[in-house]
Image (cartoon, rainbow over all chains, first blue to last red; front, side):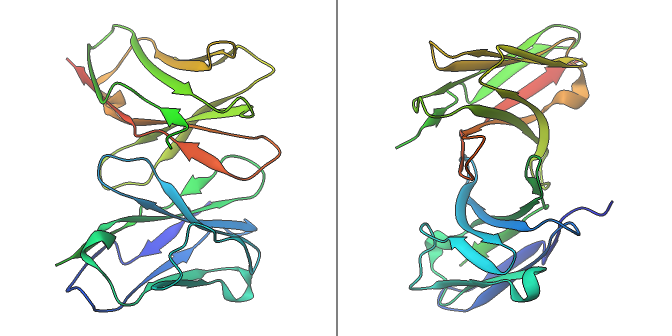
Length: 111
Length: 112
C-alpha cells in the first residue's frame, strides 16, 4: 500500500511570497489532516477534513492560510503571504479507522 | 497549554538495555494514547497504542504502560537497538473523538 505522499519535500521562499503544499492521502482514507511541526515541538493540528468537508479548522490562521480538498481525495495547503514564523515542517496525515498515517512532510524555510 | 508533556527532551541508552520513555497528561477525558516514532526527514510512524480500559499493551520489544490515576504513561523498549534511535512522540486523545494532542517528543539515542 502506498503511503501518504507530499510535495515538495523542501521549500525555501522569501517572506511575503506565496507557497503551496500538496498531499495525496492513502487511497480510501476519508479523513485528512494538516499539521504544523515547529522545531522542538510536536505536531499541531491546522485543519481536518472528512471527505471534502473541512470539519475542524479552528487552529488554521485564516488571514493567510487556506486549504482545499476537492473531490475528497488530495489536498492543498496554501500560505499567502508567508511570514518568517511560518518556517516549520508541514505534515499531512490520513486515517480510515486506525491511527493516523503521516506523510514525510514539507520543510518550509521563510527567509 | 500543553496537555501532553514529555519532560525528558533526550535519553541515551546502551544497546541491549531497557529504554523507558515517559509521558504525562493533564486532561482526564483522554482515553486513547499512542506513541509515534520519527526518524529525521521522515514523518512520524505509529508504534503502539493503548486504550484506557487497559493498563498494559505489548508488541514485540515495545510495551506501553498506562497509570490512569497518575495520568502517566511510559514506553518500554527491551532490548534497545541502535535502529531505535529516533524521536518518540506521545499523543493522547479521545477514542470517540478526533483531536489528538502531541507531546514535544523525546530523542532516544541507543549506543552500541
